[in-house]
Amino acid sequence: MSAQERFADLWTDYLEGELDESGVAELRALLAAEASLLKLAADMYQTHRLLALVVEESPARQDEFVREVLSRLPEDADRFVSGVMANVERLASPAEPSREEVSPQPAASGRMRVAIVTTAVAVAVVLLIAVAPLILRDDNHAGSQQAGDSENSVLHSQQVVGNLDEQRDASGDVILTQAAGAELFGEFLPPVGESLEFGHEYALVAGLIEMRFPDGAKVILEAPSVIELTGRERLLLSAGNCSVHAPAGAEGFQVETPQTEITDLGTRFSVSVSEVGDTDVQVVEGLAEVVATRDQSAKPIRLSEREARRFNADVGSRPQSLKFNADDYRSELPDRVVTYEVSTTDGGYAWELQSVTVQRDGLMRKFPVDALTGVKVIHFRAGQNSANVTVPVGSNGDRLAGLESDLLLHTGVINPGGSKEPLRSDPVLSGSDSTPGMAVLFHKPVVNRPGPDVVFFELQSVTNPLEGDSFHVSPLKFDDGLRSLTIRRYDITLTSPEARLLPDIDLLYFSEPPVSRESLLTGTVERRLQTLRFRALAVGIDLSDLGYDDEATVEGLFFQDTLDDSDVVDPVFVAGLPTVE
Image (cartoon, rainbow, N blue to C red; front, top):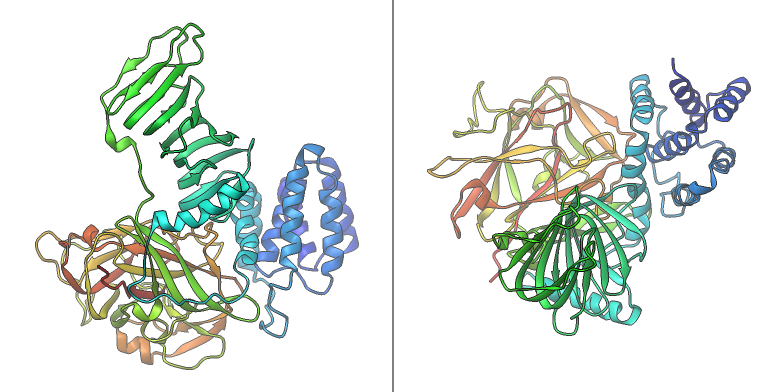
């Protein structure tokens, strides 16, 4: 057993209250011998607290030991220390439910404990990146949020951003105005509407973000990219892709790259920097001035509408003309589920869904939940996983209520069967050879409009894929031109600030995996309280991606897990979006 593995085993025992004094002494000796174990100790502490596995009898003693451990990190790790201890303090904050509100958690099983130790040893850095935002974001959602918009409430994305512009102009800060599946390396993404730091390097490893600068310039950054805000109207793009729109009043905005300095003269342009530093500049409209900064004798080059140049990393090379490609410029973030609002428990956990905000055809639209079209489950066939219904703790009500009637995001019909290959013909909905998966009918047909037409929520824990459990969605009847769609990444993932923490749940384990709707309702079950914490993820489904024509009406859909890993999709809310002119 390696020193790291031994440390992980001892540290786990300590956090769970099972380590004697000799074990503590061995822990201290390991920490003294290997400084690399210090960060692992802090990371595992956060993970255990998140999974509710830290023994509660002596939290002060544990926090004291953690602080002692962290205090020994080198000076250049001050920021890490501050972040970890902020997480520790937030974990113990009043935002967490009281002991009376949450059922006691049983000790971790041997299987779960081994998984936690192994994961912490193998991917400590990844967990720190992925788990820290999950811990911190609870404070961003404290209190009950109310939905009051009518079905016809329509807000253009620029109007939403305009409210942020007022804050921006007053503060002089660069504001994060939108994010789509965005993840930063080594840190969590600030909440939308918050300021970004000057002089700080941001490495966007997934998704897209939109920023607004003090004088009105808008920049959309696409992953993978590395940037630094070097001034109120200046951006350093070290690698990756960005699109810039500088409206009237924002002229003079600059993008610096390893090879160039691009100055806006009232325009829209895109910049792409390769791994070796080659820089492509494409002007969509207006004018931009480009200077090759490595060649002090180079004169500024003015590019006008539909002109493009490549500036090579080789010193002394001349700029090359490029074929203009309008697709390199991104004017807006993709259509998607942007956020959702819920009522909350006294402990701050998400309770009933109240509204969903989506971007459809470039427009930001917020729909109250009573404007959505619910579903009826007409077929269910499980795979090998026999945990197929999730209900509130202690509930003995309708097993289909989680999908058919209630608005809770922690109840549903989960772990449907699946197929590695998506359907190419009609699913069989009855008989012994019925198709594994779940079929639903909408209460009224859903009309295919541009952007998402259906919202799909699932519950997810930190032991599951951060991007959400993948699934196939298919037509109930395959007419000409129709096809299945595979969803592999959700719009709101575990690392999204918008993903809400859910209350405790009971899982119903069936003595035999259900093979029909009837057996789902009547099968013999064993109730088990879940000790893990779950969050609600969401993704929008565009019916056009299934081959439906514009304005086509869809009566129902079929869902299957992709069987690409041991995790199975867990639907807790499915609904159609209304038609809005």
